Length: 573
Image (cartoon, rainbow, N blue to C red; front, side, top):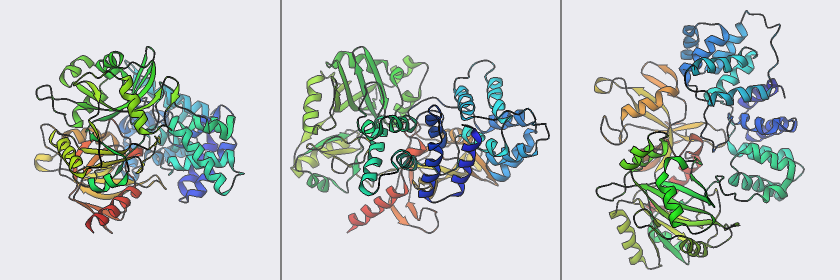
């Protein structure tokens, strides 16, 4: 397929706010895809060249892109920077530059989806001596043959900022419309659910589209867990309080809510993989966990879920998540960090055992199965603290015990519930914490500090995701919970992480590409006409960075903010 067709679809998507129209635009281009083009076009429509779970990145930030554009178009960097400051969009700058190019285009070859996709994928593998020159070459190859419109979207794709409003739900619906468009009403809804089910277990819509094309609804519904491949885990819902959570289930169990990282342990004979909730493969970062799995897990083939926490070597108490995140992100010098930040695995679910997926098995049986296949290693690889009770006093004592030991609260689970991947299920797990549930929000703007904070970004603008448009809507500003130096989240660290994503500057204010997710605590949610979301967080404060376990696409949505606002009102009554 010629890339120009995809570029025209991008342009139409960008101009179209209506979700249903976006679905039709995508369905139309998917129908015209050849066999090899389909998975690549699906990914490119999401602004990706790697699946959600891949840890590979294109690896070109704004400044390097400016240098590359100068090399590829022949215009000076200063002119590109000036255009960027004015528009805040290097894609628009590229479009204008290419339209002004005076060089002959007589021998310019037509770009194909394959050509663009392969060049962008190769960028991720470029490293070492001469890497910058090689990256210039790979991008220049396609920019040099690009039309103005193509250049606009190539640059945006490289920077991970496509701006066409294609959220995952739109891709899901478009795949359904493409391959099952003859269905109507309830039958169409069932087809949507089949596509979503396949995505929960194969979080790559390019692969899911191929399954829909080749095997239909039967193939989608037949997708199963596969040891060694990541999947979307079951999520918990917030409860207004412990009493309400206990009353929700006939047979409740309580477990500590640990401040760590959700880990899925895949074991198949000698094969062993560790994945985070964000689908990152962190097997190499935790050699001691691999050792504990081999010692403690008796099953030949299984998938076990648990929460990994960092542990203070002196006190044995859990460390804040920021410490653990250092290990998750670490690719080198593993041994030193392992000694500095030991970890503990607290196991709570068994979803696959010796060839059988256990999604339809009730939790009481999965918990029994988990206990049968694990020989706990005290203080390192153990079952989560767990009690089963309907007694409010006993539950309250367990909750207070969890807090006193440095944990976040408790999870109340329905022992009669099945496992539903990829969903927040109030009928399965309810989390109880001492304050309103924290929100995971994206930083979309900031101001440059003055005085002691000169050179640092502060007064951070928080955004929640609108799943209908893919845009991020303001819901508050934050400056507390951030330290000038020492342990915890610092202005210096935030500035270092945010600077590569600055889109534009006006005076001391900057617009930031939505990439960095922060967990935010607050006193309450208020209605507010001052922010584009219609809501404002009262007294927000940064709790931790979510750089290693959440992407911007996994941050909390406007619907989530609205839901918590409703919960808050009920709690006040």
